[in-house]
Image (cartoon, rainbow over the protein chains, first blue to last red):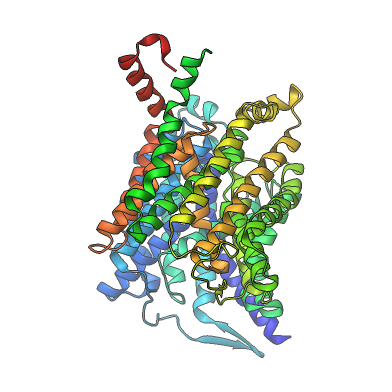
Length: 286
Length: 333
């Protein structure tokens, strides 16, 4: 029993990071209606950037987002102007083709630079575990979850209280009306895409404190973040956090009570069921 | 349409068929090249079958290898357990894949799962099946299951050379093309095109969208499932890694890049892109690992960005131009 609670708790903590990753996707899909199939590869890329910063400049994984966050923002911003901007006129199918192409490209580049074997950083300064009663919790996961929640809250404030955040939300509600009110849609879209991509830098840094990275990793994170997004629905930031925790918890529960191999099975079954039974998600506005 | 026009229209198909038939005579000495051309045709079959659900019905299915894996496992398990010939296994594998497609497709279409969500749920399906077969120890499991080894046995679909496989896959390709062509000329085909363009509008004028999409999905799954049985025999084993999300996505990308809804489009894309990729893999693979993949990805992105209608219209134009030069405007297809 204690074992199950411990796993559930660890899963829920992991779910906070999933929510952070899905938040980036939600900004891109919710605001611009752009279908991004390369989001998981962005996570993979930021994990490799974290690895590179950690390995070459001997930085701790937790501190690397200071470097990788601006880097990935720039990357997302450029990706928007080079690729995504041109696809807005076409059907979603073209967007999928372009972003899948981008995903293959990023995977190939990662494999060229860092080879296929998994890479990991030495122990982070937030190693160790905390014991409460009979329950063990990894410190790194606890701190990663806390940072994720704070980051999600900050992004929420940014979207709600600041002028660029309002512009992003206005563009997502009604692009034409927002344009008439003086919102430059291109700048807003580039900002959203940059922000959505940069959030993966934070997630990547946190993940690297207790996980390794390999080039095929993006696929899993991509599907996982779409799953969290489907469960939450569009337009609700707190809902995203709850969905992330549900997904992380379900994963952990499946692993501990059913079969260690079944973690993805549980996630995808939830995903498919949600799409069937409640297509606008648990907390969705549209 | 008079006979001369018909001849002109069928000419590229005939030339292509003749070339396809004599390819083994040219490269047949080298088994490696034989595997390559078989792989190209193999992707051609998958992309052509995908055209029915993806190109015509407009449902972006990313689960090609789910149906392929089901076909492979059905036929492979029948062969291993009860010594059923893969020739029968092909049909049974196709039926199992089509049945599974119906089982999954019915609720999906019933609950109106569309566009990007349909694409994602089909991608998730591949992963679900992969994990399920990894856990299902009686049939799958983490260890490869090798099909019985025979030097040359028609009954077991095992041959000493890759040439017979090439002709089997070529046969499947012709069947897939024929089915595509027949559907595109049938009532179902026009319904599918209508709902691929605009589903709500099609339903208003009386198209039973659900039934049509389900039919398209099942036909596609049957062809891919039957191909899966051959795939298992070609490589001689079955393994849950057959359920591969990345490769499933690639089939859909070939279909999009070829030109959605055009019968020969996905095949063109498969021939050009897959053979280009394999050529690069053979020649660049030794110098820098996965450089070929990077180049391939850039080509995909460039085509998707600058030719959103696909590459098939380009070939049509080129052919028309060629015809007008050779026989005059009057007979241009």
